[in-house]
Length: 272
Image 1 (cartoon, rainbow, N blue to C red):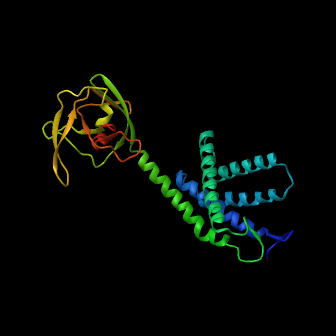
Image 2: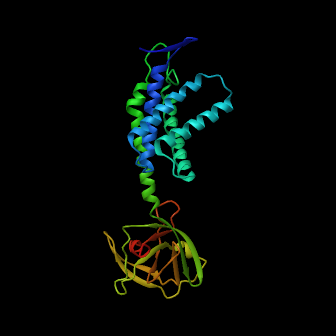
Image 3: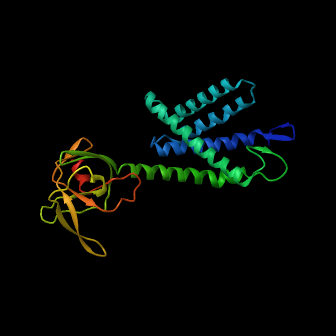
């Protein structure tokens, strides 16, 4: 049986609002649980979602905006405490932050789709005609949150390959944004020294290239010589790399903001 409140040409189905909000809250909590690897049990997520749905009743209480904001914040905080427990302030704040971020992303997507397709109603208020919130809930919400999780995972993986590197050549130090290129396995065939690639334009007007070495390398289409320098010092993650050569590339790297391509060998050296 549906319980409803009838206003000015408006019907609010309270039980439907409760059920949909419960499902949305559970989806958000589950997303945060997976994203942050909290490994919280499902029953705690369900209990937290139930608490969040009950707090919806506050929307029908006449209180000022400031009190309502505070009430919503406290509700979200208690939901995170119920779902993930308390370990320390940082842990709790991180859970709360991700919960809000995920809520904003999901709400933003649904709002965009509503504007794009010009749906008549904004939430769960029924006029004449078909309401499409069910389709959002069944298809779009899990899809949006799944894609969000995938993007977080991809960003984390890519982030692990970004480094800040300091290279000193001819007493001039270059601080560069570097990317660990797993395909860069260039080595000097004689000394077996790995080669780090940087854009040659970065050195122009800053140092004089004297007595460079030319290392043969092979590509799919041709064979060529790579102009290389012996650096005086290389620092990455506060670790000094030794026995590396700097290869000068005439081409700009396609990654945005990247000035240096690290050799795959660095993975072993910086984790020893």
